[in-house]
Structures are given as C-alpha cells and as structure tokens.
Image 1 (cartoon, protein in one colour):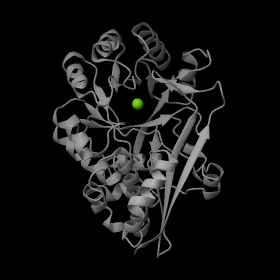
Image 2 (image 1 turned 180 degrees about the vertical axis):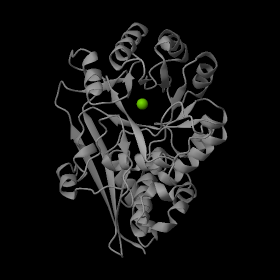
Image 3 (image 1 turned 90 degrees about the vertical axis):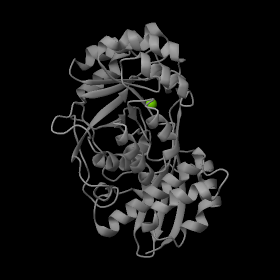
Length: 378
Ligand SMILES: [Mg+2]
C-alpha cells in the first residue's frame, strides 16, 4: 500500500463581533486549523489535523513533506517523526514542523486502522477503557456581561460531571470564578482551572493557595510554557496538581517536564505534539515518573477523534482496581462548528460518559461537503 494523494485543507470559523471568547490573555473570534487528507492506491482515505494556521501548515507540508509522503507506505509512519528531526535538520524541532508531522501521523494511523479494520486505540497498546469521562471546558472570559454562572449551569444540565474554567486575571476574580463554579457543579464533580500561562510564579502561587479549599483536580498552565523554573517553584509550593503540555511538542520537550517532575499531568495535543506515535512515547515517558496523561483538545472533529483514541489506550498505571480520577477528555463548550459539523456522526459528550468509537481507524466519518463549507482557501 502506498500514499498516492495528499491534500491540505485550511479551515476557519469566526464568531460575530462582540461575541468573542477567551482566557486571561484576551478574547478570540477566529477558530482555524488545518486538515490533511491522504489517499492510498488501495482507495483508503486517512484524515489528520495540524493545530496550526492554514497557510503555515500548508506551506510546511508542501515544502518539506509532500515528496516523501507520496509513495510512502502508511505503515512506515513511526519513522516519520525521527526523520523530521534529522531532515530538515536545522528546523525539524519547530512547532510548525511538528504540527505538520502530527497531521501526517494521524492520517497514516487512520489508514492503518481502516486497512486492518480495527479502531486505532487497539493498535496503540489496546483497550484500557471503553468509555471516557468528558469534561466541559467552559466559563470563558466573554466580551458580553453574561453572568459567569450561566455556562456552568448549562454544562450541568447537559450532564457533565467534570469541568474546567478559565481564571488568571487577578486573585479576587479567580476566587469568585472558582467559588461560583464549585457551587454550581456540586461537591463531587471534578473541577479544573486554566490560567493559560498568564501569571508569574508568585501570582500563581497566591491564587493556588486561595482556591485550594475548593478541591481543584488540576491547575493548568499557571505560568508560560517556556518558564520551566516557574513550574519548578510552583511544584514545591502548591498543593494543587499542576498540568501543562498543550503548548509543548515532541518527546524532547516533554522529557524535561517529566524528567524534572515539573508537572503532575502532561497534556499533549494530538495535532501538535507529533501525532499518535509521539503521544505514545510521551505517555511512556510520563509513566516512568508516575505522571498522569490527559490529552489537550482544542481541535476540529478530527483532532478530537484522535485524542479519544489515544485516551482509550493510556494506562491507568499505577492505579489498579481503584482509580481515584477517571480518564477525562476535554470538550470545549464554545461555539465551533469545526468540531461537530465536519463529522457525519458527531461526538455527543452529554450525559457524563462517552463511548469510545469502535469503527476502524480514528472511528469517524468525515463529511467532506461540510469540510468544503468551512474551507478558508476558497
Ligand atoms: Mg489550556
């Protein structure tokens, strides 16, 4: 089997003016990502995603990878990541190259699964669980003056038993947002907070100490991704588990987070970290230091599907029968048609549990007419 066609498809969707959503860093109106469609001489089609702007992902794939991918056997996918560091040598370790590699890797795994008629998670090490706990990413900073409790009430009505909220603007507001979220969610639900790297270590430590009483499952990106000394300081002074990884990529960056025990949980994004092949290596690294793995998902339906397959295969080590915290997967509750409209049968995270798809490959059927509707290059 060999790959005979490669196509990058930039997608975009914009929110109306005044309805931007955001985090402590600011508001966003545009959601953009890049799909990759591979086709083989056997007629199989595989889908991947690069968590990168369309023009950059397209130029990277076309310039650096097109010639190598055409004619490639999708089963040779695992050597792709290593080759990306050695050729192109001087910039292989850049985020855009690794996002491009991610897209190719996901599409190859989709094809491999389809060729052997197995869901990808079966090929990544097998079934660790057949259902996952979806968590609502919600309570964004908004441009409107909507009451902060409203989106959390909606999540609870939809049946979510876990949620992550944005904080990181200032100590007082952090406490108010966390207190409100906990009140609406109830005492038993998992509650996570995300600072999106908007604090210095001393600011994050003050917030952590102030919200500790609300039983926080993890504090995400308390300081910027490049501030490793900040993570080190937090780890020694904060009692809330620390999570990071959505802005990191490749086994070498994750090795530092894991090896120096700077975090308690790593969060690779499947469309940026290097794909499923690299995510599996990252999960293995994490297990050597007894660090948790929870995929970050801010993607289209394709990246979401890949994260679900990955999450189904990640070990609960060292937990055995008693698992204090379920494997949770992120479901952003903001408006984003790229997440559900491009899938013929979209994921339904409501009701507190999500069955892992059993269809071959990534387990999804991409609606190509919907993809055309959101194309940003036409
Ligand atoms: Mg985050």
